[in-house]
Length: 419
Image 1 (tube, one colour):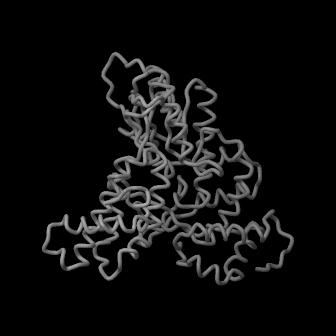
Image 2 (image 1 turned 45 degrees about the vertical axis):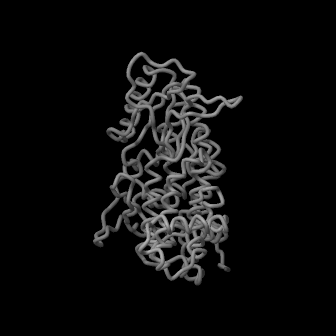
Image 3 (image 1 turned 180 degrees about the vertical axis):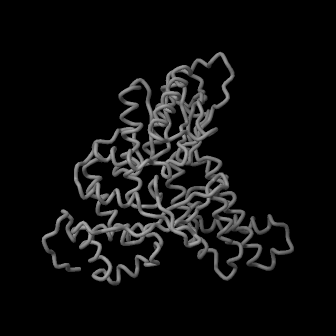
């Protein structure tokens, strides 16, 4: 792709746009309000990407409206996402790459979300370590964080990290981009940043670094915490310290025009054998963080001795969500395929679940894969007529024999989750 480069008012090169689009393409995603797909843009880069670079470099770039879509949440509710166009996502990636190089090294070491060389597993390991060291934890949940970010405070937080005018110019325009509802009506955006935009996670980290991370490290250095985007766990030595810290955090968030979700932020006792238990009844002894449930469990220590520890494993909510995903795939109806074809269809999903949730206490995944094996047994029953009038266990036994002969056919069979 060759662009004729001229003198521009903003320091953005054509190569930045091309590299940004390649990352947007690798991330995938759907179309925006213009219904222009990534495939169409990639086939005609000169037509669609040259205007992006030309307008970004000249300061005349204005984003299009954001298409609003709804996705289901674990509680049965829906979450609203804002999907920018492919061209706008490319422009956001250009600014994000430049801004990330300037700000990432300034972030707190306790911030793990959407950062290079940081992962959710690192946050889980650190959280487990702090739960073993400190008796109490605050499970903090900010109400509608991405939808409630104040634009003035967001731009003020951005000024703490960079003085580049073109970054402030385009971030302001992205924040103010209107929203197109499902019915086609256009609504102006007065607060929040679209959860679905390329640059939104970085803006969220910048905002919460000023609002929470640096404030905690300055005013409450005695406590520990982990933050992954807007998911926060705070660790305290005793219950009184946890109460004081929670009230201080509530006040701080109120000053920054945010609030804690009612009934979602609790003080949890990290119960284990080696600790002196409190003299009063504790209401909460478990919390969820990044899809894992932390609670008292029997763990194997040194010399083979078992004791009560406070450790994570896949949460019940995520188990149910995975089962719902498997149910919606309707594997038992794909009787026109053979068993190895089914294995290929679900291989990527199963491998992803194992690699993420299997990092800690993989044995807890038996609930998920037992359900999957039952779905496969139902496929056997529908596929072969000789099993239809027999008890369901006959088809399950046939699946067991097949698993013994071909133990590597399905990904979860390879990890020992046999029928």
